[in-house]
Amino acid sequence: MSFPLFHRPGTVVFLDDDPDYLEMLGMVLPRHWHVKLFLRPVECINYLQQEPPFWEADAWNQQQLIDHWRGGKPLIPQILAYWSKYTERYALTRVCVVDYSMPAMDGLTVLGELVDWPGSRVLLTGQADEQVAVRAFNKGLIDQFIAKQTPDISRRLIDAIDHLLCAPNARHSQTWRVTLTPEQNALLRMPSVSHDLTSLASRRWIEHVVIGDPFGVMGMDAAGAVTWLQLETTEGLAALAELAELEGISPEGREDIRNGHKLIDLELRQALGRKGPPELNPAFAVGHVGTLIGSLFAVDPAYCPDPANSYSGWLDRQGNRNVQG
Image 1 (tube, rainbow, N blue to C red):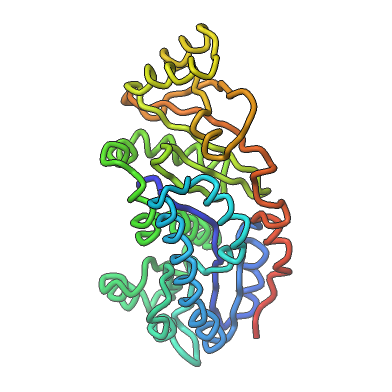
Image 2: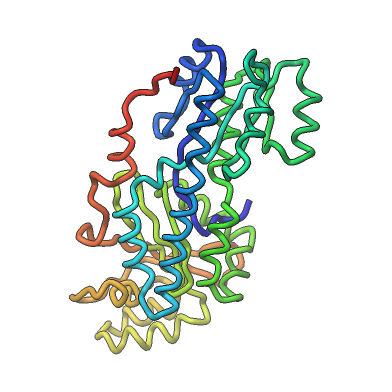
C-alpha cells in the first residue's frame, strides 16, 4: 500500500441483529476508534444516508485550500486552520460492517441502499453465505467479507478495518497530489520511501497531509500536537546550506546541512511568519535509495489546534458505545 497523501481517523459503523454481539464488539474494539453500533437496518441506513452532503462539504473545504494555495496563500497555515475549525470531519464514517443474515433485511440489501455513501463496506457472513459474499466482492459491492466462524473473529475484524482505515482515499489523494511535482510524486511512490513514511506516521500521528510546497508532511497526534516532517533531496542540500548562510548559520551548521546530517526549518518559519532564529534538527534517511532525507520540527502550540478540538478531545465528547435501537 502506498503512503496516503491525506489521512485522518473516521467513524466505524456496525450493523447486526444480535445485541449481545454488538455489545461484545463495543468492549473489544480499539478505544481510539469512534464506533457506532446499530441493531436495526433502517436506523443504520438512515444514519449513513445523511452523510454524503457532509463528505461533499469536507471535500469542498479541502479544495478551497488548494485553490487559495494556487492564488499564493501558503498551505501550512491553511492546513492548521482547517484542523482547528472542522472537528466534525472525524464523524464521517470510513467503514461500515454489516451482518449478512438478518431477518428484516439482509446485509447486501442494506449496502445496496447506500448508493451515494463513499466509505468502505465489510460483510459478515455465515458458512452458508460464503458464495454470496464472493459474488458480491467480485462485483465490487463490498470491499471485504469475513466469516463469523473465523477463529479469533475480533482480531480478524480489527485487522481488516484497520487496513481499510489506513487505505488512501482516491478523491483526497487527487486533491492533494496537485501540490506535488512529478519528481516528488515519483519519490513518494518508491516502496522503501512509502514504507518508512508509513512507519513514522503510524508511530507519531493520527492525521497527516503531504504537500509539495514546501515538500514535507504535516502530522498531528491525538492530543493536537503538530509536527512538520521536512523532506529534502540530497541534490537540494547545497542550495539549502546557502540559504542557511543568509540566516547566519555557522559554517559547522552549514556543513551539517550539506552532508545531510541536519536540516533547517526555513520554509516552515516562512510559511508561519515565525520570528526568531531558525532551528537545525538531526536528519535521517527516508527510504533505501539515498536520495531523500527528512527532519522533524515541532510546530509551536500557538499555531496548533486547541487541545479541546483535538481528536482525543472530540472522542471524549462522543459518549459511550451504546447500541442504537
